[in-house]
Image 1 (tube, rainbow, N blue to C red):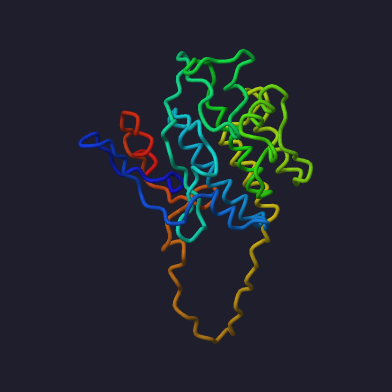
Image 2: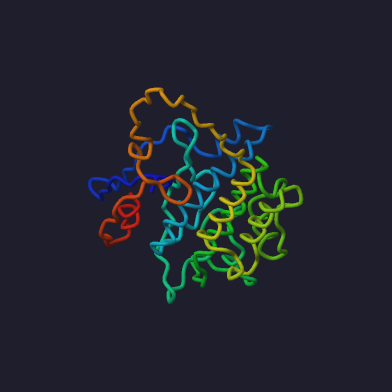
Amino acid sequence: MKNVNNFIGACKEPVMVIVTELLLGGTLRKYLLNLRPRCLDMRVAVGFALDIARAMECLHSHGIIHRDLKPENLILTADHKTVKLADFGLAREETLTEMMTAETGTYRWMAPELYSTVTLRHGEKKHYNHKVDAYSFAIVLWELIHNKLPFEGMSNLQAAYAAAFKNVRPSAENLPEDLALIVTSCWKEDPNDRPNFSQIIQMLLHYLSMISPPEPIIPQRIFKSNAVLPPESPGTSSLMAIRDDAGDTPKTEMEEKPKGFFFCFNQCY
C-alpha cells in the first residue's frame, strides 16, 4: 500500500526503536503552512484526500484504528505528489467487546464520542469504533481545502468542547456541494451515520472525475492504401502493470496474512 509509511522493523534492546521508510517531503502541516495564505489547487487537495482515505481503508480493513489522524501525522514524498499515513503510536486493534481509552488523539481533530458529558478520569475506558477516524478525516479534508486551522480562534480544549458538547463544526458553506456532502457526512455526531472509507473513496473519485479535464482524444493517423505501415507497437498496456479502480496501485498477489500488531504493514506492502 503506497499510502502507508512503510514499516521496516523494530527492536526492544538496547533501546526500543521502530524503523520506517524515510520520507523527505515533510509533514502535511509544514507543507500547508509554507503555502499560506494560498490554498491548494482543488485537484491536488482532493488527490491528497484520496491518498489519506486509501491509507485509512487499508488500516480499517485489517481491524486497526489510527485514533490520531491529523496533518502532523501525514508525510509527503520528496516530490510532494503523494501523502503517506504515519505515526501509529496510538493505533490499536479494534474489537467489539473491549473498552478503549477515552480522549485519545489530538483535541482539535478528535471525534465527539471520545468525550463524555461527565468528566472522565485519566485513562478511563469508553466504547467507540473505527468511525472516530472518519470524523478526523473530515476535519483534515476541510483543512486541505481551506488551508486554515479548523476552529480558528479557539484553543485545542475549546475546540474539543465545542465539537463534543455544542455540535459545532467548521463552516462548510463555501464548499462545492459534493465536497460539502462528504465533509458533513463524515463529521456527523452519530458515528453510525458516517460513511466508511470505501464509500468516502468512491465519493472523492466521483468528485475528482467532475473537476478534472477530460483526456484529449488523439485522432487516428490516416495512411494511403499503398503506404507501408510501421510495425505495430506492443502498446503501453504490455509495458505497465494493470492498475485498480483509480489507477494508483499495481495489482499483485495477496500475501498470506501475517499475525501480530504489525500484520497490517506487512499486508499493505
